[in-house]
Amino acid sequence: MAFRRIAGQILRSLPYLFHRLTGLLARPPFTGVPPDAGRLDVIGKILLIRLDAIGDLLMATPAIGALRLRFPEAEIHLLVQSGIAPLASAIPGVDRVRALPCGFLMRGASLLKNAGAWLREMRAIRAEGFSLAIDFTGLFHSGAAVWLSGAPVRLGFRKTNRFGFFSAEGLGHFYTHEWEVEESSHISERLNAMARAVGAANFETGWKLAPGESARARAGAALAEKGFTPGSAPLVLVHPGAKWPPKRWEESNFSKVIDRLQEGGARAALAGGPGDLAIIEKIRAACRTQPILLWPPAPLETLLGILGAVDCFLGNDSGPMHLAAAAGVPVVAIFGPTSPEISGARGSESVFFYRRLECSPCPLYFTRDHCHRGHNYCLDEISPEQVAEAVERFLEKRRPPAERPLHPAS
Image (tube, rainbow, N blue to C red; front, top):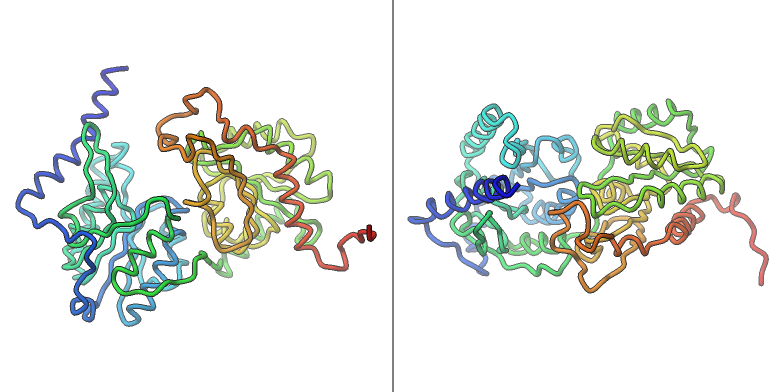
C-alpha cells in the first residue's frame, strides 16, 4: 500500500517537472496586470477552456456571455471534456465547441489512443490562430492547453497547484497574464473577474440553458414511458448522486422525503449518473411508496429537457443541481463539505441546506470516501423533515391558484 501511494505521488509529480523544464527559457507572466488594450482591439478568435465537470461548465456561462458582448465580432471556441460537449453546444454566445479527451491524463486508461487524440486536437487548435486564450479551469492540463494553443495573449488565474511532492503558485509561463482572484468568492464571480480583465462588463449572475425541441420530445417520451402524465401531479426530480462520496446525503433521508412527498399527492422521479445505480436501489428499497425510476441515465440534453418538465429539483451539490438551475427549476440542494457561497446554483429559486462547522468548507473532501471524523456531521444534522418542507413550499407556489387549498384566516 505504501509503495502504491509513493508511486502515485511520483506520477503526479511529473507534470511539475515538465512545467519547470519548459519554463526555464520562458518569460514569466504579468501578474495582476491586464493585457494591453491595443492588443485586445484586434481579437479575431478566442479560445475559452473549461476542462471540468457539468457544474463547473455552467458556472462559466456568465463570463462567456460577458465576453460575447465585449467581442461581438470575434469567433469564440469553447474547449471542454469530451463527455459534456453536447451540453456545451447549448450555451449561448459560443460559435464552436471543441472536445478534448482528458481522462487518460488522470487514469492512464487507453493511454496511447487518447493521447493521440489529444495531440491531434491540440495541433488543430494551434492551427486556428487564436488571438486570445483564457483558462477558466486553472489545472495543469488546461494551462498546458492554453500554452500549446500559441495564442499571443493567454490569461489564467493564479492559485496554488499541487503536483505530488511539489506545489506551485500559479502556472507561470503557460500564461502571458495571471490574474488574482478572491478564492472565498463564488466560482462564477471569479470567472467573471477573468472576463473583466480583458475589458468585459459584468454579466447576469445566473446560468440559463434552453433544451431544444428534440430534447423536450425525448424527455416527454421518457416520462410517458414510465407512466407519468404531465399535469397529473406535481413532479419532483430526485438526483441523490454526487461525484465525491462525502457530498452525498444518506440514502434513507432521500427515502423519507420521497415518501412524504408522494403520500402528499406529488410524484418523485429518481435519476442518477452511470455510477449511481447502487444508491438509487438503496433508496427504492427503503421507500414505502414507489417512485418513478428514470434509468438508465439519460443523455445530458435529454436530462435538461426532463428538468424543464418538473416542478422542483432535489439533490446534493452536483452537476445536475446546476443543470436544474439552468433550466429555471426551483432547487433544493444539500451541501456538506462544500459551501453554497462558493459553488451554489444560480439562475432559479433555490434553498440550500448547509451546516457550517469549524472545519467548513472541507479542503480535503475529494481525497477520501468519508470524513476523517468517522461521520459526515455537516450532512447528518440536516433532517428529512426540513428538506421535505422546502420542496413542498416550492410545489405550493407552482400550483395554479384555483388548485391551491384554502387556508382559513387565523
